[in-house]
Length: 80
Image (cartoon, rainbow, N blue to C red; front, side, top):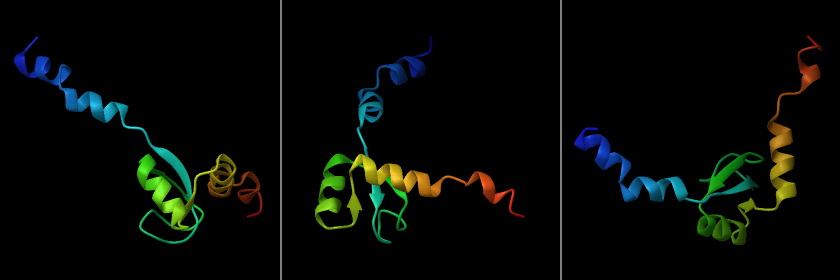
């Protein structure tokens, strides 16, 4: 194994990045987090502040509704 590969495998910053936790949110209005009714992934502290500011909703139901709204509809192809 080369020294470069060994350094990459033992890089603590790479391990940190792999462990970074995100929160899925539904964006409630066009803002720096995305377009209205889309799903974004934010750092937990940012998601908490954005929800407090009324920009996003972190509830599982809200995220599911936004994901369903973004999913392509099956009959959209049939109605050509």
